Structure formats: structure tokens, C-alpha cells
Length: 115
Length: 110
Image 1 (cartoon, rainbow over the protein chains, first blue to last red):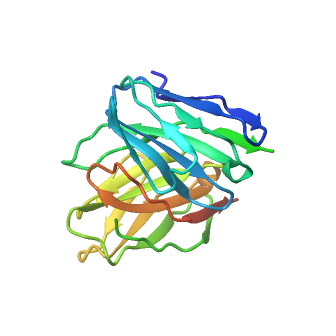
Image 2: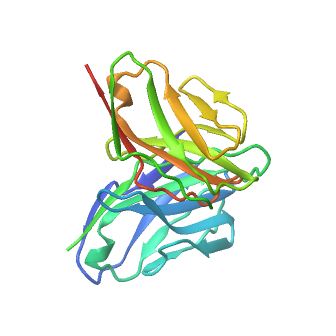
Image 3: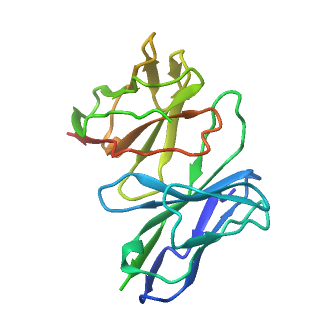
């Protein structure tokens, strides 16, 4: 059971380049999300999805695009990278169980530097 | 979601109990208290959550006051590996959109 897998772990981009951060989970979770974490800060929600074909914006969505074609995968696309997008990116997933609280599982992070 | 207030840092001697406080005075009736931790720059790790009753699992205990306006995470026998940033988060049961503050940096020392 791999849990939440993110690739790549490290990436350097030039300003204006585009790229996709991959996220996959093997727990059949309905909910998946992307967070970013800047130095000394907590995590901030970028985009999230409650199921295949359904996505929505979080707190800091500008400059990012997502899609959810399968339950397992939730890629994050940087359309035109900017130095302000230098950050650590975390993917997370969970079941949607509103009854007794929920556990969200996080990936190990993707370190992105935009120069 | 309600906001939380945590001390920025705490120290604890190895083998002693670490008691991490959290204030969440604006918590609403359907919101849970969640605790996560982040070791170095790894992905956050779930620790425990509760609604109004005290909770215990293999990692920690969670004590929630009767008015639910504050809580305490207890690591009963802290080890060096418990050195991390601990986040107290208040969210609804689905916990689909967690709001992370800056947490408490716990340093466990010999």
C-alpha cells in the first residue's frame, strides 16, 4: 500500500515554463487536494476535488490548474511558472465521511524552485 | 472554519510528557479538533482528532475542555523523534479543507 505518491520530488523550472506535479493514491479516496507551503508558514490549500470530474478552488488557486479524470490521480499544472511559486507542494487524500471526523493522508512533498 | 491559537515553540525533556495547548474559542458545534505534526519538511502526519470527548490512541491523548474552547495534545513519553511542528486545526467532520496556522515547534531534548 503506497498511500499518496507525489512525483517529482525535486524540480527546477525557469520562469515562464509549464510543468505538471503528479499525485496518485491507492486508497480509493474520494477527496484529493493540493497544498503549498512557503518557508516558515503553514500549508495553504490550492485546489481540491471531491471525486472524478469535480474540482474546486482553495485559498490560493491563481497560476495553477487541476483536473480529476480518475479517482486515483490528481495532477497539478503550473501554467507559466513564476518565482513566487517556489514552494513545497503537498498532495493529500481522504475519504468523505462526515459522521465521525476524518483522516487526511499527505504525500511526502514536491520541492519546486522557479528561477 | 474556526481559527486556532498555539504557542510558537515549546521544549520538553525526553521521557517526560509533552503537553501542547490550543485555543479555539470560536469553534462551532459541528467542528472537530484535529492534530497533525510535520517532522522536518515531510508531509504532515495525522495524530488524533476529537469532537467533545477526550480521545486516546497509540500516539497521543487529546483533552478537550467542557466548553470546547481549548484543548491539549499530550504525548505521554516524548522522544527525540517527536521533535516536530504540531498543528491544531478545527474543521468540520469531512475535514476536506484544513486551514493550517504556523503551529507549535516542539523541541525534545536529552
